[in-house]
Length: 125
Image 1: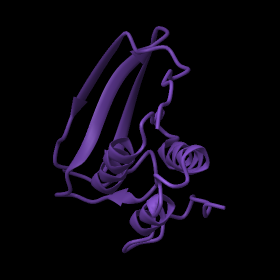
Image 2: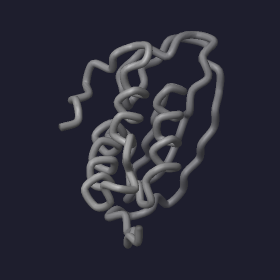
Image 3: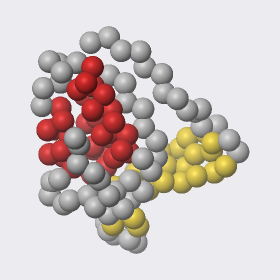
């Protein structure tokens, strides 16, 4: 499958990512699940268009993002929109190359719904 990949957003002026262990409860910016004390999570600080932003992402969403990156040739995502971006990328890949993506949609749904349901995600059509 040949695909042109060009993400439609400007890169940050700087982007710092680390994986601390939570000392207090936080909320995942992607799925809104709690990040409990002792859990590892991704913490990103970045600057876009002169504005500083920070994001906390639970390990489950980090793993989901990596899975989609590994399986979709061009996966453009934004912080705070991972679930919708993953749905869109998988749907687009399945539309463009149905023979090459057998089971991809099922793989995404399986990862989204085990073992805890993500409250803000709509089921793929």
